[in-house]
Image 1 (cartoon, rainbow, N blue to C red):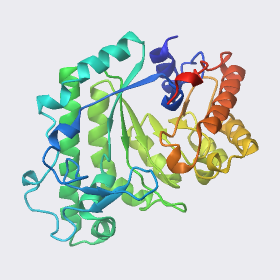
Image 2 (image 1 turned 180 degrees about the vertical axis):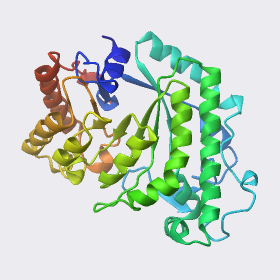
Image 3 (image 1 turned 45 degrees about the horizontal axis):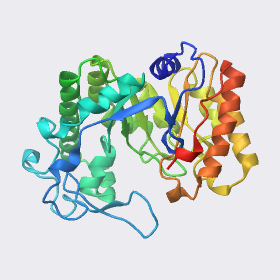
Length: 344
């Protein structure tokens, strides 16, 4: 099997020949990313202002940063959202490099993925402010405006999906997206509220993606145990969970293995930064026992910014070796050997 076939077999539980991997920091991935270049629409914006008009800030510690200036935080959600800043996915300039990206992925036999950063809830609170958004979701007087904002964001991202499908029919295999929904203790909202407010909006997005032939991947940090059930109902194919210890590896496997694909690695807070190889071994053993199955369902992936979480390349390589042994045990084939001389 090539990379595309391994990934599809794992997602569809058709018995891949080895564990699928997304591990760019070691130069090995079955997934190949493509996507619109939104930076071309940021020309002339203030420093660190994104295409939605949100202004980002960073600490001295290397990390992605966070939104510090929310466009609607003080003025409220505008009546006419069409007059605010947001990506114009009909703009041809966004796609000038995508054909070449796709060709590179096709020639390598890769599973081709496009992404959406801050697909809904994260984009809502980046625009309106986190506290404002939580209050607005439960305040009867503000729920209508929150619904308008959510629908606007969905419409913008539907335009992206439509453009990808029209421009590159049958050549992109999945859409991945981010939407953190949890603290270390629980989700921000109940599953009942999620189903009432968020479900119909995610369903619109995910149905459109499936109609285009795309697998749906969602990343969500925090203890989102209950929200994963909501994702399944909405049509998510793969959920990216990078804090498996916080979630409970056995609990999540018992509830969801076989019903949704897992993309994960050793815990990025409790395990990898500790430098404890025995803890890495324990995570690998439990993830392969409870989240992976002989027919598939588990994808081993990287956390891209190792420096931000205090994890060096040697610890990543050790983890990679342990998952490679686990792949050999479960599927009969080890992972490809990375060339450490060429890794970043």
